[in-house]
Image (cartoon, rainbow, N blue to C red; front, side, top):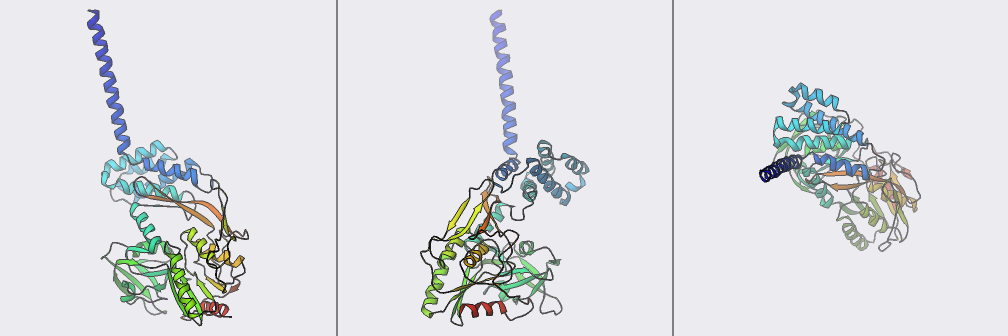
Length: 434
């Protein structure tokens, strides 16, 4: 009898153990299936790497705001008053936030989970208050790296733009043999709307996002040309491939247009020098107007083509980033004078180059640059998305700060945005040819 009782107790224990184990497995499966762990992954990266100290509660609050915005914009979720009420009360409670997120997924279904998750990630990145730290979806991450490799855009029209004094967007350059060039868009045209939505005051980045899209789909731009009546142009998006460097010989001066600092930039500049040497030019103009940056190491290689080896290009330092000084290698330094062209849209890596050349006695022409004296690092996430996080601030070779300050030219030349005459380039060519 006692034997049977013992066996019964053992069996009961085994059943309880198996039941508890099944429950644990179910809990693990639920957690594993819940993609919200990506938020924890991103928060950990930000806390460990961001240039300034980060409050975890502020990150949670940012994620909450991102999810609340997505709920308010969704035609189904915004009718669920209890969801908006709960999200308004979550505060910095990560468990309550995850509960609200799961409820959203339950209502909409799993296919929309990534949309909600990425809204939380964007909100978290925005909570840093840093305009250069941001979140990229898997598609946006692929586009970002494709552009840095050779400025490849899966669906675009082929233009470079900047913000006009009117707060609308102005076309700086139309790339040859692209939908824009074939469709009649011209440099200096103002883009005042995209698909009927105004571009006033929203910035170049958001306008670019609206113009880009899936290849073979159409986009309608409302354009103003030289103050005339607005008119519409419709383009079919196509894959766009733009090189980082363009060059020509002008007035016996080697002219290099640096659009961005990509993987191919250094070798393309070398190819320019072969052409310039054959033409026996007197000097060089390095035009980095509207150059938003790129790879820092490529900027250092660019400086090394003009300055002897061992010179300081810039120095970097941050909360978790060890102080680093970057030097020229001097392997290809040229002896002819170089004049640098910058404007208000020259930023980041282009300011590294301009600052280093200016500190070493070369002239900078144009107007004060953007003032982006910070360095970002890319962190791929487990689902293919990515965080771009500011790691450090940088200074010129003479320890001049750039962040929020910019590079002030030796020769200030204001360019009339409505004029077809490029007086900044004319002055730069004049200085380089002396």
